[in-house]
Length: 130
Image 1 (tube, rainbow, N blue to C red):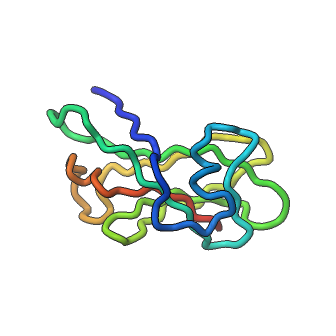
Image 2: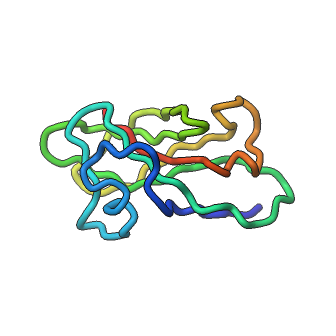
């Protein structure tokens, strides 16, 4: 088995959150993007996969670091944007202290089939507030 990390590398098509991609991608825990209303989305494109295509993809796992502050939405869900369609994961409650949260996708939600390496091209990952 192998693990490949495909990092966000540019802003995606959704940019409702304050701060957006620039704040999400700077690896600075003191900054970050924020949402003041439910249903707001922010997405990112990911690096191209350049590894071996031998074997299969077992799962795609978006990972984030979340924090609930003040009033407003207290839940965040990861979503995948494939071919312009959003596939929302489950809303996850955010704590008053920073904590990692993730969503596992063992199949491509657009097709219901196992992931193919070609599916990673054009894939966007995102967050939606709730």
